[in-house]
Length: 266
Length: 316
Ligand SMILES: Cc1cc2nc3c(=O)[nH]c(=O)nc-3n(C[C@H](O)[C@H](O)[C@H](O)COP(=O)(O)OP(=O)(O)OC[C@H]3O[C@@H](n4cnc5c(N)ncnc54)[C@H](O)[C@@H]3O)c2cc1C
Ligand SMILES: Cc1cc2nc3c(=O)[nH]c(=O)nc-3n(C[C@H](O)[C@H](O)[C@H](O)COP(=O)(O)O)c2cc1C
Ligand code: FES
Image 1: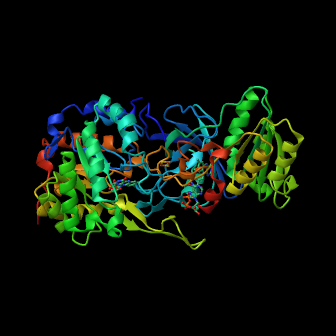
Image 2 (image 1 turned 90 degrees about the vertical axis):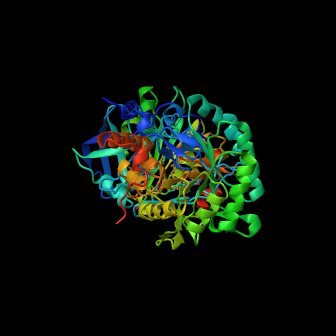
Image 3 (image 1 turned 120 degrees about the vertical axis):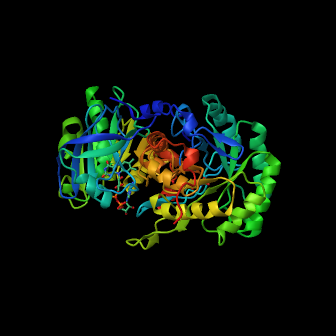
């Protein structure tokens, strides 16, 4: 449940100042909001769908960066994400941001393993950049179907010890992200696991971390109508019964708070 | 840069905007719709909501409710389906944790309530009345009556009337009955509620619909059916408000797909005395305030008042 709202919520306009296509089916856009948006890793924006009618719901997208410009990595899965990935420099996009509960700020000396898949790498890259500013260099396990899905690999390499894993072996080792995670946990010394990616990957990472008694945080997705606690659409089955809300309790949640079995059924 | 909420500073001439819902005086005709703006303190600051005619709370029940399993929502052409399942904190938490904040901020509160039986509706209404600080109750009569084998209070004129009278007697509060468009004879339900002492009617609640995920050959919603809301609903809602305004003499609150002052004016001209903004808030959390500001501008420019606009559409 969310508490009193402190500041008025508004829809703001942002100007696309850069747009690129890192790989087929993906778009990266950099936007300049009408005023600065102080965001933290794991937080997201509700982005207005370009060309949508006035009933088209906004789409949640993880924020990469903070301040005068924000970046978004968008994978095309349907109408809304296609329109957003297709934005070009000079376009305007509407947004509500920042939203959601972020990852805890990185602390000095903490050994963190990041596990990311697909566009889930975007909040993790943001987190790794903050850690780098503290002189830390987290391990990032980056998984995907093929090398072309690891679109942030180059950026990741600059701030992380990067381990790439692909199902078809086109980049890094062949296998699943959980293989190197299991090895890292077995080697010991891991203080925390942060995971963001496809549901099976997060569930498996959470299970491995739990087994090794290492705290694990996951960054979850849910269908969202509002993004700010008004519709109660983004229910996440909670361990012990009931629901958490992805937009306000999450999207970042301690893995043990989630009922993975009911989550899978959804 | 001018922040969008500065528009509120322009709403300074309440006389042109004030409306009455029977005994309930509203400083302007714009409210939030139940289930789309939380409890009045969480989606926007309570202080901001105080500028609206009223806020209509998320549907409250005697006990807290967890709601339905996900997926609970799906976007549809010009609207959305929801099957939230009336998740809410329960009346006691609302009275203890929220209502004092709303009162302190000067928010006019309409409590939207639902229960499975008439007795529980009565108990809930009495509890809210005893607490004080509630301007009116809005009865959500579209939920199944478990004791009566799943019929809806809102579909049957006799049951709706009986409920209205009971809740009114138990609470002594002004009662707004929220009409379901699924009633076989909505005009009969409306007349029955008027006779039973409702101070106003609100129309409409969502219409049940569905969507299918063809890749997985599964319904998009865990409950299969969900309520359709948003602009897709507006023409139907307008028609019902217009029809009901010919059938009853109590005020009608128009609801359904309102996202601009022009939408609100359509409802007012068709016979509504006030409006509620629902799904539009998901797209722009300032939507109710934009509608309000737009209405004031319109009245000023047309040298008129909301009271004069109500029912002013010329019939052909
Ligand atoms: C907090 C959060 C952060 C996100 N961050 C990113 C990000 O950084 N980059 C990115 O590309 N995507 C991100 N997503 C997912 C993104 O919001 C969806 O892919 C997008 O809304 C789909 O819209 P669409 O119109 O393209 O798809 P639709 O045409 O609506 O649907 C196409 C398919 O996508 C699925 N889908 C729709 N909405 C979602 C959703 N919210 N989550 C998962 N699947 C969905 C549908 O079930 C359907 O099968 C995030 C989601 C959340 C909740
Ligand atoms: C997510 C959601 C939750 C809702 N919850 C309630 C509720 O608890 N009680 C109620 O009477 N109506 C509820 N409604 C219906 C709205 O109050 C309103 O009648 C309907 O959505 C039509 O208006 P709109 O098109 O402006 O949204 C809900 C609607 C939505 C979209
Ligand atoms: S998306 Fe609306 S409550 Fe979370």
